[in-house]
Length: 629
Figure: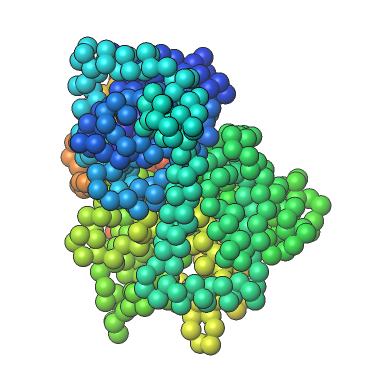
């Protein structure tokens, strides 16, 4: 057997188009025979990876093909001697929190293709640490899989299980048959009958864990009390476009309303996928309209969020009361204010300000008379995260560490930093939006929304600075602080950078060269020539006087590259410096591990969007020339 065409196996997930008709936008629930064998083989390899008689937790997002994949995997897992617990539709952070609550030989398989189109699907694997497998563990599993599928006996065994087992009869056997022992396969019937029970356990584990994450264990109860008290004085409303995602049946509604938020939602039926899944660009427009309608009825509605299909990320929409309504026809009927989407990089930057200030408020992070942090604190981010985060971290004397794109890489890097004695509360991929807040090991829109809400609602009381005032003091921007500040004031305090959105059309290239080492070495030749030819132009226009090439592979960062090919299939960044050796801009490239695309980015300090456009166009031109050689 070979891996089905267009399948990509990586630490971020094993993904491809599972829809039987091959259309990535298809809504069919049927999958091809080759995908059934693929799913069954993956299940067996993971069961063997875990060892003797493991407990395996299963869940899916709301894609149509999820059920077909589950029904293929269950018989294989049971045949391997696994104890199978299937919770039905769960959000990715939900199944991971559920896994954290388990002990012993336990793992999870989550069926999802995250933000990819609806006809796609995939598999995510993890253990009890609350995240997906690390890059090293994932690599070992992929290697085992590739070896196993070349074994004819292995594939014959999979085919025997999934094509001779009478799935229909097993699934339709009654609860009475299970009780009396007449069920053909009691473990299979037990799985089928107990889905609701397992869903409730996953739900409860996730609800309790979210409270732990949001408030932390260092004076967290005091922070929560201050938050709720301020929320009573100044109510806050939130809207959500669930877009039929797994979060439609997760904890969101109960969790937010229990804290005291007002909440309005649309597209809240599971599988009611009303628009493009990735929460970027046009996908945020329905949420913008919903927020405007809610704000018109009740001005306390200031935030909105849109999750992707598995619910591990959610980008934000805000009410911006500083915008002139003339900027958008949809807002022309009112004089001031407008709902707008935040860029993913803005969302992550705001979450960083919130969580760094959280550490200061609770006393977990304190400073000496020289202004230096008394605790070694750090943040782990991916390589295309905007350098505005470096500026924010610098204000709090927090060290920044970067890993290659991929949630598993960032989570592993953060764990390594904690083992070295660093305080790491927040981590994540700024290019994708959302954040990971320790002890969670996965992005979660609840944590992102609560980070922004804490900035708004934990205000200065009785001389104790609130979170926004803490940020203004540390960043020397007290001129921007006022007691009646709004979300627009917080956003205005962000270090100014213009960054290419990761999911914009301009950020994606189609590359012919399969060997990325060769491509990047050719790119080096082009870049060196271009640098010499344009050196004066670049200095005059951008104040750039020097550069450095950096490679990101897994959790490793290698600086001062001589051979750009050393970046391999990882990220390659050209970091630019001004005449004072200050980091002022960068251009970046990497082939996606989950989609057949090549991504590029430019990030530049200041507010001049034409500077980002020039650098990105230059990057594209150089890469395409290298690809054509």
